Length: 406
Picture 1 (cartoon, rainbow, N blue to C red):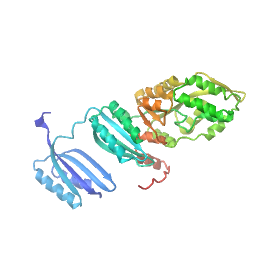
Picture 2 (cartoon, rainbow, N blue to C red):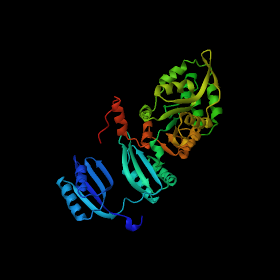
Picture 3 (cartoon, rainbow, N blue to C red):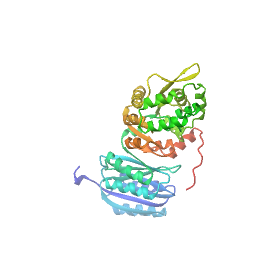
């Protein structure tokens, strides 16, 4: 198309107190002029409406201006009409979703993020609120900024303002069925199962120290696991039931699994912990696949040994790939969530690797990180809002506590 072929357009912006019939009245008036609608956007915030309609310019634009103005003023609202050329500007090739999560989310943090996007040559095309409680989540649709560079720069601002910022390319994968693979200890559940078992054996503090060092990447995972398991020798197998009953699932985990299963998502858990716990957890939560180490039990007692191959750092990544192939989900459509150094390969293998309340070495390597105590905030990264989650629950008869007034 040459410059001479680009049509003239009118941008009609209506603002004021919302009331039923505003949009239909404006469009009815436009229809009488025979114009074509090029684009429409509408925002409603605390009862205030902003309606933008981009239309092709008619031969008699003065007549259209008068008609629209009369319609809008009769509704007690304001209108601004601008003449221009063509559609909205062509969107740049680099298009990303930037999700900002804070509790609270201060204006200074938003200003820093918006400024950094501008510094990268990016433009914020659209802003949506994904949640207002228990955290505030805002999604920015950004064009013209390279995802990798933007992610690196925004990470520094996120740390400075104590918020979470996720940068994801805007592509079709976000709308498809995905496989979510989660670590278990300190990710899906609170605490570490091996430490809970060690408490019964009288080695709680010693095992907790080794576990923390292993999660930071300071120790070989398999060697440290076998050393810790040896301390459990002689425990009665019934202790596993006691530990399972004491497990606390992280807030939002059940909501996330329940909601995304409705959309056809698949779930798996991969753990450096123990199948005697994870298999029951998977069945309880409705998780499709599970893989973990197996404690050896002889005559009702733990022997202090692990049966078979240890699920270590490489084993977790291998499990993700195998589960994806088994479930028919492309690896690019997988999401991995973890917190420790033994999750690094799994996070790297996934299409989207999320460090959840993770050690620094993991946060630095992951595609994005979340540092809030609510696992269901991950759904905001997938473009699913709190309102949509609660509406789906309401349809299923699940009552959600009323949100706080703001």
